[in-house]
Length: 190
Length: 222
Image (cartoon, each protein chain N blue to C red):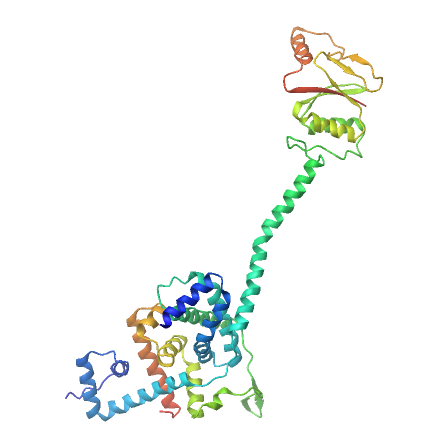
């Protein structure tokens, strides 16, 4: 049902009813935003990237050949966009927000006046730690664990989105989970 | 029951239901008796459930739909404008070209005719006009220059001569013309300078005196 609806909407957009695209955005914006947010662990960055992803999707809609589910196609654009963004950001040097206090180097505390969305979650500490650890994961593990364990995609869908074969998907999931489990164990979370 | 512990991949596949029924039964049976593997299994389950809990995390986000449409519309407009730029440029060139042709900047055969000949002396101006109109000069004297042109370019060269107030007259095939200064009919003597005429020169002279088809001769007065 969802697939038929998506394709109907897309056909309408391609035929010129651009307004119909807002239905697609509304349907997938949470999913896209969360994926991006867990990749970069930065709310503002995630907003900008999510916006860019939807613009890319709308402009590339003509090239969607409807051979796969729309969501799979959207996921692959999203994953590639995040990869490219990460590469782009790696090219720029970052400024450390650390200050010297005596002989110690400590994080510069910046006041964030925005409402922290994570406050709404019951187990704040666990969520904070898991987010930190996801952010520290190597990119390959970060992609695959977000798709598999957060978004709940099947191995086949992941294979299609990332363009790798099923056995590679399995291997990456095993290694990623093992890596993360060890990290969470070291942080005393499990 | 074997005491060989389960490896991490087996535990992960067990959670994802990626094992065959036989392997699955074996792993589950092992976990029930092996505390080490059971602990590993539970740790992994917790790790995965922590990750999955992020799916339900409530994060307030703005509605992207309106902004996406606005940005896409403006980008589309910009793209259409950029696509139209070559067409606009081509139109300008065509209009400008048509304007030049109508004003006589180009003659009918497409060759350039110097429309603005000011700054040259008169003889130079006439020679240049003849040359640029793909004509050839037959004779130059102190008072006139005879030139031969394609009939097609007659109107263009006449227009240029009129524009520059240069007196001229078309020579008819009989070798006669109306002198614009006197208004009288004159016989044009088609000879080369004042030298004697040899056998070869006779041929040349006859050839010169006979106006070829499609050509026209004009005497341009200084």
